[in-house]
Amino acid sequence: MSFMNTLRTALRGIAMNKLRAALTALGIVIGVASVITTLALGNGARKAVEEKFRYLGSDEIQIGGKQMIEDGGLVPFGKILSYEDGLLMPGEVGLIDRTELSVQGEGKVRHGRKVLDMSIVGLTADALLSAAEQGQVQPVGWPEGEPLHVDAFIDHGRVFTPEEVLGQADVCVLGFQTAEDLFEGDEPVGEVIRVNRERCLVIGVVAELETVDPEQRSRSRVNEALYMPISTAIKNLYDEEPSVAIVAHVKDESRMAEAKAQIITYLRQRHNIEENPEGEYEDDFSLSTKKDILGTQQEAAKTFSVLLVALAIVSLTVGGIGIMNVMLVSVTERTREIGVRMAVGARQRDIVAQFVLETTLLSAASGLLGIAVGILIIPLTAILNQGTPVLDPLSIPLAFLVALLTGTIFGLYPAIRAAGFDPVRALRYE
Image 1 (cartoon, rainbow, N blue to C red):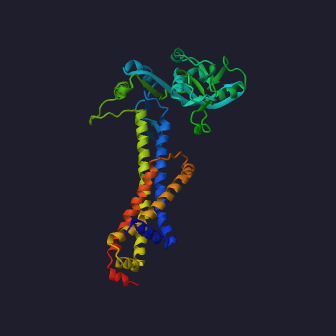
Image 2: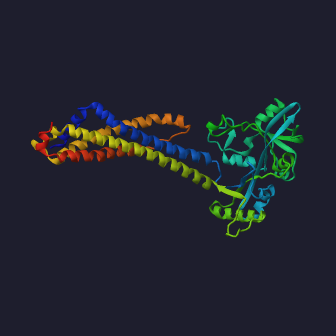
Image 3: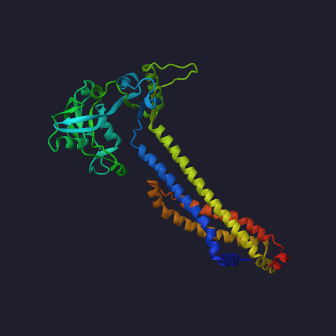
């Protein structure tokens, strides 16, 4: 029996019951659409992770203090990370080039009758240099693709110097909106304000900034801030020395692991941390790098993707079982037809080819429709998931191939069963 005759017979078999064929195809359509959508969601999740951490420098080691729960609140575990810990680190740790230190607290800022409750940030002198290097924020209207430089971050005035940081100078730099709120258009540079009742000379105003990521702009408040030397912030804002955040810059990125080991040794000596009886150290600090954070997040995104793909496979399997069930019913209903075909010379392989071709054609049509549905619903999933799914071009042929294999595999048993009928009994079947 020629292929064209088999094809015409298979098409005729599908057309005999259009509603049944449509319902049979529905499971495959849902499965294929699920494969495409879930792979897009997985790719979007991975891209979001990479986008979130792409600003973290590859030469940076972030150092933070550990905390524990005590009396229902968080308290430091062991010793805090002190200002002195970070200040002395570049001289004591060979692979560390420089450190950036920061603290953040809430305070009252007063000028004349204007009083603002706001976030006050204590920083080292090269903080704006890091902001320019990392590219998390930029001046409003900054041309896309143009390199950022430190001078672009200052609207007028200047930033504090390393000498002013070491000398606990009573100087500060205002965020753009803070300057507007306090001085209402007057020149702030050279004026004295009060920060928690302490006098502070305004030496500069930061340019109006925006986050580079457009999605974060409506939620960020980068222009409402006051910056002062970290030593001054510790002196004026805290009754007790606070724990500081430390970012250490490594001289040689290829020796990151060695640099982390040196920092650990340095901090253990500073904090008098010794081995316990089990030969372990109970460190009161933690270290993380871009690779550590990104790797953890990528693993979470990968697990999410595997779960979604597994759900899509379950959907395809259910669709395949539906095909098998309907084909078994179809074989039973067409027993007499099968007997007639065998009586006029059709071989077992012709019967198998007919029914396998029916399921393959049905799966192919379902696969194409599922691909279209999957692509169309990707924007909807972006809205519901508040993310950005990324369509993987390879997912389209992959999903189509899986649909074909599902139809062929699950249609094989009904085809073999039909081919195994006794022609005489099939002809007598009512």
